[in-house]
Structures are given as C-alpha cells and as structure tokens.
Length: 490
Image (spheres, rainbow, N blue to C red):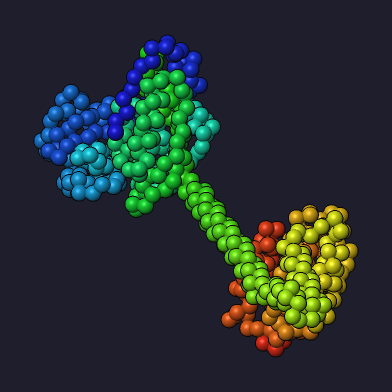
C-alpha cells in the first residue's frame, strides 16, 4: 500500500519552525547508489548517487535495458548474482570488484513486487584532503540525526524518504535485530510494507495516511508484527519524527524500530493466565452454586421424608385415638392421653426441624451458638460431643463468617450422626495469627475418601460455604479410623 501525501490547507509553519531536526537526508550524506529494474531488466529508477558512482545520468539509463547499457562493463559474477536475486524474496548481500570502475563494491539486492532493487556503494573511494570538509559536514549531519533519534530509541535506526518511497536502514540495526544483511543501505518502501504481518498492515498504513494527510502531527508511533529474515515474526514498536517541507507536505521521517517480542510474549502469557484464572473462577462459582442448590434440594427432601414418613404417621395415630375417644366405646381417658402424647411428639419434631432451618441468633456469639447446638443434639443422640476453644476475638469477626462457621459445624455434626456410628466427637476452633482453624473429628467407622466421603452432598455444601470466605477444606479418613474435617479461613 503506497502512502499518499497531501498538503494541509491550514497553513502550518514551515519545517524550520516546526521541526527540531534541520539536517539533510542521510542518503545525501552517505553515497549509496540505488536503482530498480523490472523482469525485463528495464531500468525504472536511478538516483543521484548512482549517477556519481557509475558516471551514467538517470536520463540516459531510465527506460533502457541494464545489460545492454553495461554490456562490456559489468562483471559476469555480478550479472549472475542479479539473476539469482530475482528468484528469492529476501535481501542478498555480496561484494564484487568492478574492473571498469576500478573499485570494490558492496551490493545489496531486494526482490519485491516484481521489481529488483539494488543498493550499492564503493569501498575504495580515497579520502583526499579536499574531501575533509565534506566528511566533517557528513559527520555533523550524522551526529545531529543520531542525537534526535536517540530521543526515541537507539535500536534499529531508519530514515524514510516519503516522496521517493525509499527507507534508509542505518548502522546495521535491522541486521542485528531481524537478520537482514543490510547496513547503511536503501530499501524500497514496498519491501518494508511487504514484511508487515498481513493482519497489521492495513491498520498501520491507514494510520500513517491519516497523519500525513492531517499535516499537524510531528510524531508517529505504532506496534505491529514484522517478519524476520527467517520467516518468523517479531513484535515491534516503531516510532518516528515527521519532517515537513516548506509547502507543508510530509517529506521525510526519521525514527527507530524496537523489537518488543519478549515484552509482548510476557504480556500475552499474562493475559492468557488471567483468562484461564477467570474461567476457573467462573467454573468454580458455577460448582458452588450447583452445590448450594443440591444441598437445598437434599435438605428439602429430608424434611419432606420426615414430614411424610414420621410426622404424618404420628398425626395419623393421634387422629385415630381421638376418633376412638369420640365413640365412647373405648377408654376415653386413655385414648385422649395417647393422642396428646403423639401430638407433643410432632410438636417436638417440628421444633427440631425449625431450629435446623432457622438462622441462629449470632448476637449470642459463635461459641455460645455452637454450645446450644451441641446441647440440643446430645439430649436425643447417644454421643458425647466436646467443644475445645480458645479466644477467637469474636467481636472482630464478620457476622457472615461466624454464621458460615456455625453452618459448617452443624452440617458436619449432622454427617457424623447419620453416617459415622461414632460415640465421641470433638470440635476444635482456634485462631492463629490471621487464620481461623476449625477441626472436627470423630471415632466412627471412617471411610475411604478416594471412593466416597469427599463428594457427598454434605461435604459439597461445606466446601461451597468455605469458598465464600476463601477457606481451604481438608479431609483425612480411613476405614475404621474415624473421620477428620479441617477448614482453614485465611
């Protein structure tokens, strides 16, 4: 995608006032020849440096066949290397002695968009005293350029001629970072564009077009993927300073490209880790919700069974005794006494169910609420339950956490009474630094926790309650060796 350059009608100040960098283009201070040819070897472009190095003017070579023009001058090895360059799409660097010119040349070829681009420079130009002033100017321009670009970054330096659509890659940065055998040489803009990832190129080029069209911005920066010489892609951060000509047209840009692959890889890993963590938390939340629903359904089922199988039968018997008393054919006093006893049994059972379902009054405190729970249980169950405690500083505990601990104790005692056949159970509740540790153990039949004991409704309910306060649940049990439940709240 070529960048279209437009002038701004808003009358922005000239380059001298808008840009801190006034130096000449680096391509004017480093004498690299540059030309392009098509598949027919017809010359399409020939820069001024090529004119000086070859002695051939652009007007005399553009539109002509390269080999016909230099039929007797170009070495056969150079001819062969150019032909090979058309067969690959990566830069080729070689050195060649051109006898006609009496000098060695560094040559870099690029094949892109059916066009072969050639950048070359002489290695054997003598430095005469008359050239010293020119070299001083060149060094000054280079220092000025480096000073400005160092404010951006000093990774892979470049200068982009927006009018000629050429990019000068400076000082071998692209060679070190991306493997291209290019150092202080021109590359076509199309070659740079062709190395951008296809998914990133439209976005990057659109943004550049907008900046150049606006004519008001002096800096550009973007991130995209850039293809290395080996075909892999690097993440890069590109940043440049736009230089405008007197007619307010973006003419050049100098800047630097930084390889940020390591940073982007770390960021992507972090994002992936966060995504997985979020998915795990969502999955866990769904499991907790499902566990709560299953626990509620189980609790409702147990209440339904109790009402239907027990209380309903007792009420049925009480009704029968009342009917017998009404007939007067039986001992009326005995029948009424029996019916009254059955009704009291139902009242007591309903009271127990109500206590189980009702939220305890935590104003009594966590420890006192657990003591009341134990007192109610041992009246009707043949088990000794011991509460071991220390000062929890209940006043500083969240009331919801206290209720959660109470419900876990209630749930586990219910498990013990239903399944363990235990004669003794111990509840230990302690506070260690910033942790609250709840340990409930019994001397019952135990179980193989690999086969059962972890995934029952009661244990799922305990785990779901603990998760609400980032609690960690541990279960230790073996057949015949009792059962231990440990919950740590951090």
